Amino acid sequence: MGRTTRAVLRQPPDLPELAPSSFLLPVSTHRASISDLAAQLNLSVSTISRALSDHSSISDATKRRVWELARQLNYQPNQLAAALRKGRSNTLGVIVPHIDGHFFALVLKGIENVANQAGFNVMICQSNENAAHEKKNLDTLLNAQVEGILVSLSLTTKDVQHFEDVRRRHLPLVFFDRIPDSPNVSAVVLDDYQGAYQAVEHLIGQGCRRIAHIGGPQHLNICRNRYRAYRDALQAHGLPYDEQLVYFCDLTLPEGLQAAEVLLSRHVPFDAVFAANDLAVAGAMQVLRAAGLRIPQDVALAGFSNELFTLLTEPHLTTVDQRCEEMGRTAVRLLLDMVADQTRQLPPRQIVLQPELLVRASSQRLEA
Image (cartoon, rainbow, N blue to C red; front, side, top):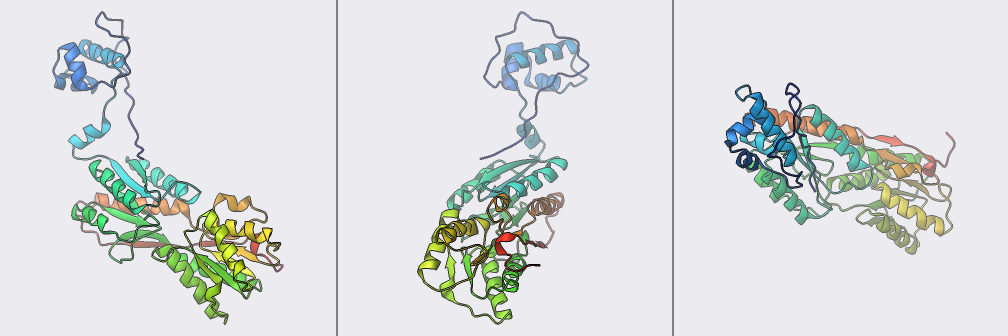
């Protein structure tokens, strides 16, 4: 799926009012080209182009004829083609896993705001959490001759070799949130480790001693860092790690439901759940409440992402804010710096944003 900004044809303000002409055709739904206009008016393509650009070398009478026919034939200028003729597309490409939920929607908002202010359009593609589709997205953006690409990897992307073609072309490339495990890429990430550590430490501070974890695929940096923080926080506070209290999944709502069912079926007691995202902990909440457990009195809950629905659950969910818009703004600024560097000599940069723990009723077992 792509999204670009298209210019709207406007009559130059200094031309006189247009009068009906005998050569006019009925309004067409076909998108005419400059060649169509030239053929109708028996003028050269270059004359049509200059007339549409309000060039001083073209008479007002000719401009009037060209613009009147352009309206009749539903002509609209191809901004992308014009930009490419000048050697620039003024377009940035973005690949995200999906635009469902709160996180990527706000990241994209931040990206578009900064890009538009800098005079760039944004073409957005969704991989739908599929590595093969991600490769097709990349081909689409390369064929569109975008000037730089922003990427958050799909859930199933384990091999990132398809991005080598971008590097060979010396095309600016910045990853964000979900990034390859390499120091040689430019990227913007949240300190997922710190956010998860704070969440688990908060649960421990509320008196929880048997904390379960619903984790995501460990080939993804964000899930791996959150799981590592969970283990380290337990160890730092002298609490044992029990693999029976850990369940890995794709962190969807249905899998959050399944995770809680599996944890309960193991008959290993737990008094808290920290999940690597909010969808999974929301699914777990439903199962735990159906099993007659009180939240947070029997089981305290904490998630990660600060999705909008976390303020609609009862009780409201404790979560970690990911600085979504700031991530988008920071990522596109980094990309624009690379686009502006004609030498393509800038070294890789990785920018780490700091998380914020948002403590809410789902985890508050003790009075402040």
